[in-house]
Length: 396
Image 1 (cartoon, helix red, strand yellow):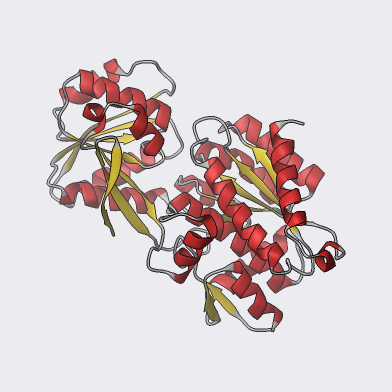
Image 2 (image 1 turned 180 degrees about the vertical axis):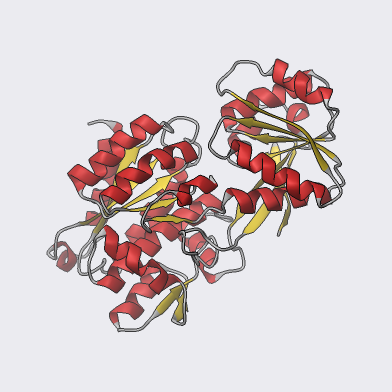
């Protein structure tokens, strides 16, 4: 038994053991697809997102399932690699027949997988941030709970300007969002009393970035924005320390997380700021997720993964059918509008069975989508690296 089969089998077994006998005798299992990074650059986040989705499914199964059917996650590892992800997506769609694929992380992976989904009329739910993703001709099948590049770049630049930094340098790995993010940040900085003094997009997975660091420091920045993934950011932070740079540094939380913090000396990382879209920490859904996951503070990825599973299941219940088109056509019907506000799939499913309308407000935020499938707004959480730990600065 390979790793992927083990995970999928574990999901089915968990569902079966958690179900009352009467439910085990009901209809066939409803399969939902998970395509997320269990290996590669995104492997710090993929397993946690999978756990959050599984927790929702387990809770729903315990409460009776959906349309009289138990739910099982069919899990594939996208390996943070577009080619591997496309093969896995084709298997989920063609062999397993799932109506939705949830969990893609890297923008390059989501961009590669998206055509597989819309051509097969399969819904796709993702955390990938590149604006180009929802500009694809996806026919409404993509739902993105991650803020767009435009929204992230605007908020990050406003924060940098608020720190008093005046000269910002941009270092980014080659991705679909690298150049658009730089251009947006430059515009926002110029309107807030600061400036982008230079930028460089580099190739990933090098053992040293000293030449790139030397080019950045030649511009004499007082803030460097590191737009990359954990392996490269680890090397960049070491090279910046060796070069004697003492100015500000800001990066995404997926690049600098607790595991990376624990792997580097504090003198290398102290003072670094990381940022991530924030869970809606004041919501009822957040409190329920804390209990469901046994975590003090579910992060943005765990929050979004919770919302994908909840949205898909509520949309299926609303439609009384379980195809990708049914999910596409009913997500907004259960997540925005005048229905009763609910913070969990179980709560919403109960009301839908009673013929009532619901408005799911999720762990990651209101889960209101525009015509392209992007969320309309969310909050951001800023953390400070200090003594190999990450301390909260603020949520805005």
